[in-house]
Length: 366
Image (tube, rainbow, N blue to C red):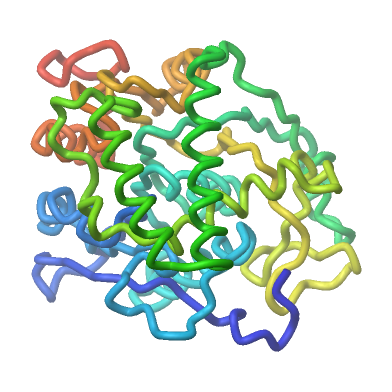
C-alpha cells in the first residue's frame, strides 16, 4: 500500500499522444488506450492511426513496459493497487489538461484488469469502455444509492451486489491459464532473485514454445504481440505475481472484499477520511459496471480463452453494449485492423452491432 508522502503517489504512466483534429476544433473526444503483457505503446499504433482524425488518442503502457525509459536500479515491482492508482493519476491528469469531463477507453490483456476496475470506480467519467480479449468475471449491480452519500467508509458490499458470470472456461482452459501464468511468476522471481540474464533467456524461449505449440492462439496467426519474443524481459511479469499473491495470500478477503478508495474518488477510507493517495485493496475479480457502455471484442480462433459465455450474453442483453468475436488470435486487432477500427469507431459514435452479427449487416443505433 502506498503511504502518504510516498514518491509513488504522483507517478503516472508513460504516454504517447496522437491527434490530427484541427487545432481550432473544440470538444475533441478523448480516447485512452492501455495495452497489456508484453506490449508497449506500439501495440495500438494501427488503431490509434485510424482514430486520430476524430479523437485525441492517448496511448499509455504499464510501468516498466516502455523499456526505453527503464533506468538502472529502478524498482521492478508494483502492486495491483499501485498500478490502478497510477492509471487514475494518468487518466485524470490528461482529462484536466484538455478540460474534458469524460474519457473513452480501449484496453487489452492485462490492461483490461485495471481498466475494468477504473470503469467500475469512475462510471460517471467513462463515456464508452472497450475491452479486448479479457472478459469481466463479476456483474456489479448498484443496490443503495443513499449509502454512497454517507461520509463513512466506502463499503462497496453495501452499495453493490456482486454476481459471478457462470459458464466456466473448462478445466483444460483453466489449467493452461494457470500453467503459463505461474510460469511467468517463476521467471519474474528467478530474474529478481537470481539472474536477469538467465531468466530472460529462459522466458524468451518459453514464449517461443508457447507460440510454436499454439498454446494461446493458432500458430498461423503471425501477430503474437507488438513486441517480439527476443525483446521480452522478465521484470515486466510483475502483474502476474501481484495478482496471484492475492489468491495465495494469508488474508483470503483480498480475493473478494472491495475496499479500495483513492484521492480521485468522492469517498472516505476506513478511517473516515479521504486518503491523500489511496487506501484499501482491490479484489481479484474483474467487475463489469452496470453504469458504463461496454464493447467486448475477442479473437475467435484462440486456443485459450479469457471470458465466459454468460458474460457475452450479458452484454448482448444490455442496451448500448455488445460483444463480438473477430477472426484472429489474442492480438486480433493486428490480424484484422480495418474491421476492428470500424467497429470501435462505430461504437464510439453510438452504433452497436449484435455480437453474432457481421459489421456488414445493418446495425442498430442508440
